[in-house]
Length: 155
Image (tube, rainbow, N blue to C red):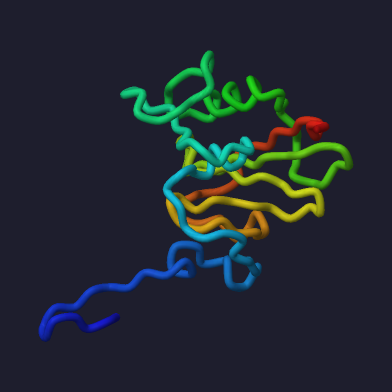
């Protein structure tokens, strides 16, 4: 805890408080904090929009995907980007994968697999990191609840 202004106290929360497995699993910061995009957009390869299926249409969301906070809606959104369901997060040459996290039935986060098999995530409006899947398991993000894959896009 840090002391501020004489008698007032504030609690300083760190990335390790939110993600208790992250230190043991290891991670690396790969870009600074930005509010330009979130984890769902990042998993889709987008860095210029905030993706979430909010009913108020304040965030971007793939047209044709249901605007509800459900795993089925997230699977449908990524299917519109040529992803298909798969059984695991193991590295497959020629494919990129995403992992969807949920707390119970509610989606909370998406991570994208890199060509070397590691995973990358955007932590809300904060930093991007590389990490293991277990590293982000927490009360806030829950557990990995499904995987999808697509062939790497050729430029």
